[in-house]
Image (cartoon, rainbow, N blue to C red; front, side):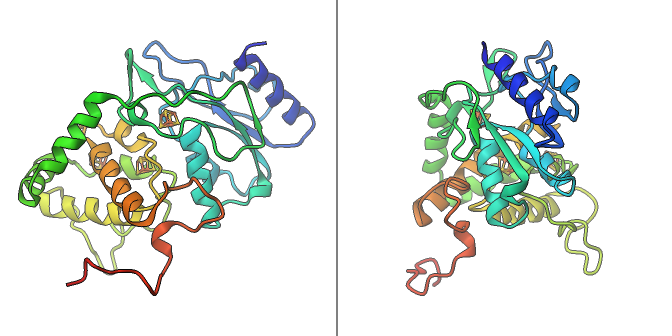
Length: 282
Ligand code: SF4
Ligand code: SF4
Ligand code: SF4
């Protein structure tokens, strides 16, 4: 029995026995190679599930939308499961209301190329799950092109980085698609939408774009699981993963560990340590 058939069988069983009210997974890939999100609430609908790992969305995002409906099953790759872990750490989901069908991930392939996030993925397998469907995936070597670009970025002076960041973010039209697709960006009222006080202007200009991206980066520090959903959603092709990877690297170096990899540990920036060296405070 292949992996997709096994997934369909388990999804059917879970729905037939009433163990879950819904299974969230992926449908068959389109011609571009990307799979749509599929919400199966009946055994018949579960027949369209596939174990494709080429869904452009992070499926944890949808768990937040159905969390009041009862127990839900979700198909989780490495990054979906890491986002679920962050949401559990932050009390946004209840573990007893989830059934995690883990799958090893070969990465999101679009038009014959791995997405930039998947090209350097360190955690293709879910670290929490109720059962694995199929075998775990091997951790691939990071794409040398992405690693080289990151190394070049490290060589730049702070002024050069600021210049490049400004040039990139000047193109942002502040559609907020990057926020909407991010499972770990869930505030009921985002600071950019607040009107009392209004913190960010409504038009798109570099200054307000910077405020949005820098504050979002701070909010996501230690919580971003590097799934790349925001990067893929951006309609103007801003290289959001460059910045996400850089922030994640800083968190890894200063606090240790990757976001969403250890349910027993709170997210890095929610912890106060009296013996913190605080060498950045001058
Ligand atoms: S980031 Fe990793 S786990 Fe997530 S889709 Fe890409 S390869 Fe799979
Ligand atoms: S998706 Fe792209 S254009 Fe839209 S707000 Fe995010 S970075 Fe800006
Ligand atoms: S900021 Fe982007 S890469 Fe990070 S968790 Fe959110 S959608 Fe995924």
